[in-house]
Length: 320
Image (cartoon, rainbow, N blue to C red):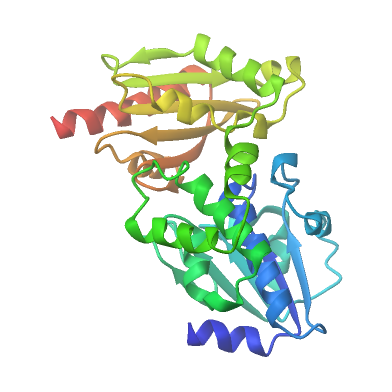
C-alpha cells in the first residue's frame, strides 16, 4: 500500500485501463479508481480511462462518456494503472500507453497474473479486483459513485454472491457499500439479470443447441459469427449464457465457445465441484480462476471441442 501511495501522490497524469472485452469487474474497478482519485487528488491531475466500448447496461454514470477508445499516443503518462488484467497483451489497444508510461502499476485478483508492471498488487484470494480496491481505499473517502462501481464489480465476479469466490469478507464489504445508500437492487437487476430480447433469443438458441458429453458431466454450446450476425448481436450479448449452462443438473464443467474469426474461438468455462478449469485453460495459453477461466483456440470447431474434452476428461478421471 505504501508503494502504491508513493507512486500515485507524485503523478501529474494517470492512465487507467482494464482487459479487452471489459466485464462488470473490469468496468467497475476502472470507474471506482477514477472516482476515488478524482475526489482525493488535486484537480490539476489528468486522469484518463481507456476501455473498449462497454455495454449500455454498464453506463450507470455520465462519466462513462469520458472513457477513451483511441490510442492517439499524444500523452506519456506519469503513471499507468492496469486493473483486473492478468497480462500485458490483454490491455489491447491501450497497451501502448502502458509501455510508454514513466511508471506502471498492476492491481488484480487473478492467480494467473504474470506481474508485468513496476508495482504489482495481486490478491488472488479476493473475489474481484473491486474487492482488492476496497481494501486499498480509505473507507471514509469512498463516496456514493465509488461505492456503486465497487459493488458492480463484486456482484458480477461473484455471480451475485453465489460463486465459490464469495467469502464472509466479501459479504461484509458489500454491506459496507450498501451503507453508502447505493441502489444495490437496481445495480443487480439492470446489469446482471435484465436481458434484451436479442440476448434472450441467443440464450435460448445456445440452450437448444447445447449437448452433453463425458457421461453428462460436461455441457458444451457453440456460437458462430453467422448466428451473431443473424440476431444483429455483439459478443457482449453472450454474457450470462455460460452461467446458465453451468447450473444444468449433473454438469461439472460448462463450456461456451464463441467464434471470433476464421478458425479462431474464444472459450469460456465454468466449473462445479472440485474441477479446476484454470488448469484446462492454461494448456491453451489462457487463465483465470479455478471455477471460471477462458482461453483462445485456433483450428476447426471440431478440433477445438475435442482438445477441450481431452483435458476435461483428464481432470474428471484424475479425480476418480
